[in-house]
Image 1 (cartoon, rainbow, N blue to C red):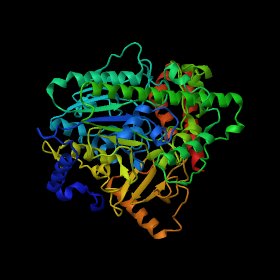
Image 2: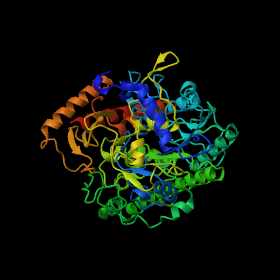
Image 3: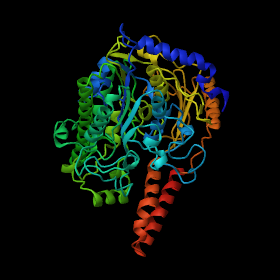
Image 4: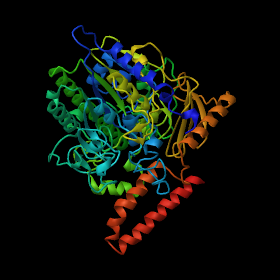
Length: 604
């Protein structure tokens, strides 16, 4: 690895361990009777939530329980993840950049040309160690419920990667009311419990199931007296958007003014909440149609989809409140560290807008009537217009390297710790790889040092955010230290307040641009011409990052949405169609020809 991107913790390991233990002492609640009890750690990971979906970040959706954590803790307004789910989850679990953790791309979006290449395992590789591995070795109980999406074989499921117990979904998403996959992508669900196929209830709601099982796990080990890691991974608000009827009904008529009005309202709310600078500039995304030019039926459909989205978020928030209430009841709330974040920005991809075949297939497999949006049996998606409001006032969405894809709401709270002043906003840059070093430091557990059980493992690159929690420093990332990132050809180099970024079609034009994301988080003012020296140096930094991490160029004409369709076609639809020989074979050839034509057209 290039020295420029070497592990910062290698420079002084003894000092790092001492600092971690000192921070635990300084941040721990005071006691005169005995040494401070080590804190529980509760990670609350939302799926596909945009920057301003949370009330405490400027949104109108009812999220009172998440907002209560924000009031007790610190909101990070400049926190970054990956542009899609499993790369973020890999970094959150390990503190290692996604390419070195095996998620240079995720299974649904990886092109065949990259599969199996170094860093493109499409699952969490064995060269990394999870935070669960390290906390368990340090005396913690470790539990995970919900979406895993980091592997589906026995050696890559959570209980093989440090978790004592886990109810885990190995895929990107699933139905929320029954054990049923997203039929456009998968032929069956892959829920497991403790490494074996899970038997789910005949009827359930995903957010409730995920919290129910976590409460069961926590209670089962309570007699041990050990602290616990609870990794709670919701599939809200991944497509399909589904929620209880009452939650959807609560937002009836709320979104009839459209996404442009909501995007402006969210911008104002983010400023009022202090998570965006006053006067923040905002672009109009070219993927958002003119609301006033839609037909009444189209407006009804889109407003109903957003009501389902909001209802799903509120239902998830209620389950977070139920978990918090349980921790209070068993006396574990005050000494628990809560982390809330989303795995990426809002999802703009809509199966109903992906061409005639996808639309026909969705209508064939699901009840897509307007009245049934968000209900059992439906396949509802937010779409690009309202996704632009979810990320307001940022540019871009999930999959992109723009701030709307990478900057997400993040909250850290330790209710019983007087060193953390509640309600504060930390505006300095922070990254998802910072979470494992931070949580290990607060737990008083020394991080792994590049070798585990006699084998070399990837060192964590993240930094300890504890000084930002107490407000003793605005940022822990040095202004002259670059941090690179790439996913599906969309690429970034962060350095101080600046961001070098490139997005491939359909999200961009493959040109590099330069922004000051502290002063201009909406990415409205490209500084590449005004600051050519910085632009050139950061391009050189990115080349060094890509070389050190074996980043591969994308195949000609590649787009993430098209690759999802192509991979599903190859693994799901083709076998089904071939069963209908010879008519099915003719259809397979026609679909393959369509994919090639779309790729060639995209490169013209």
